[in-house]
Image 1 (cartoon, rainbow, N blue to C red):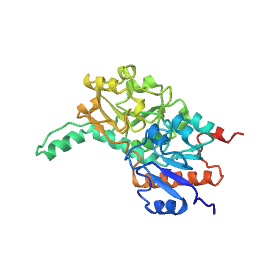
Image 2 (tube, rainbow, N blue to C red; image 1 turned 90 degrees about the vertical axis):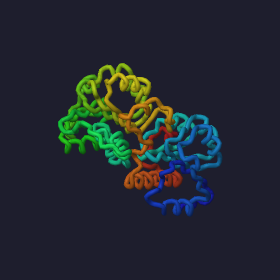
Image 3 (cartoon, one colour; image 1 turned 45 degrees about the horizontal axis):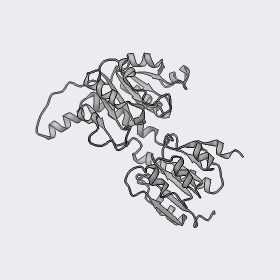
Image 4 (cartoon, helix red, strand yellow; image 1 turned 90 degrees about the horizontal axis):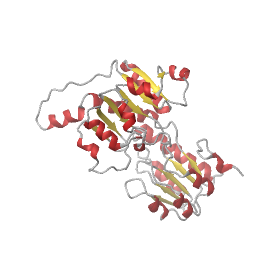
Length: 328
């Protein structure tokens, strides 16, 4: 067995190992030192830069691994992402400093898909305002909207989008998707019709975002996008906050073009109580909690730990996102 007693491990996701407490005991027994994130939130670049010296491996959450962090990482071998997104990791800098970056694709797909559908139902049935008024002693009447027969537009038909589609088929929804990396034949196997983005915007009663943040998708939900949507649409975002121009969404809700939104991600996290979106009772906000479900936390914890240990043993894990690091 490889001796890790001289190695230091930094673990930043505050939800890591919640469903399997013994994972902490295993890590603390294995490594010379295990450092935990005591901030209760993802770490910023300067904070990480001040902690990363003499650290051999990181199991990382949504922390900011910029070039400055890797410049301070004198011993770092692996950034093992607990989750899928790697937009906050400077992959070029990681590769230049010979640091392997991994993630855990598919481990949280069902959990995020379930939350997306939950947010749809909450928005369509006005559940949060009704809950608040009932608890205050009221007995309000509210005309909600059924999912049955509605057209759901999925922007992105990867692992999470597919899980959403499979579950919505049971509700009797019409499913359409826009994804440049998916074929029409592949989409149809999941009961989804592949369409252009403009076709999706014009037809969808609910739009659910499941795309990564790229130069092409950053703030894609902007004024132009929202001018093309079907009036009264619901916007769901369980992906990344950077997909939405929040100021444009505020104006679309004010003008009535967007009926409501279910948001699990924000451009700034945590968003703060003064976020203009929070003035609307029809906006449901959750704290980037899509992956925080018992089975997903377990799967991500185990996979992130396995990727980390594999690299430290000199092995190549399956989930490498910067394969150029292995080029001589």
